[in-house]
Length: 70
Image 1 (tube, rainbow, N blue to C red):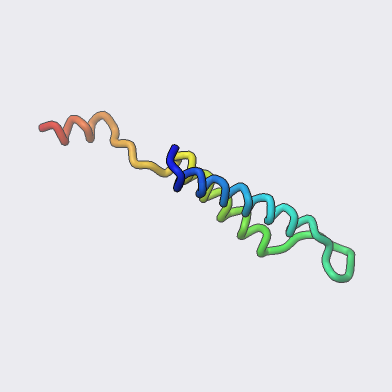
Image 2 (image 1 turned 120 degrees about the horizontal axis):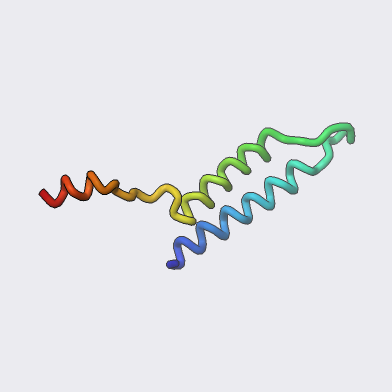
């Protein structure tokens, strides 16, 4: 794991924690929870973490590898 990947994972975790804190904060009138911004931050954090852990890396299938060899 290189420094860029670790930084990406750390940013994803930080965004996730920040989103949860933002989501749990009460509104100014004190009656409700939730924020659209928090949900968007959670989605961005999830994408960063998936990418950081290699979930979006290209892995050719066996048939693609065979076609490349020919």
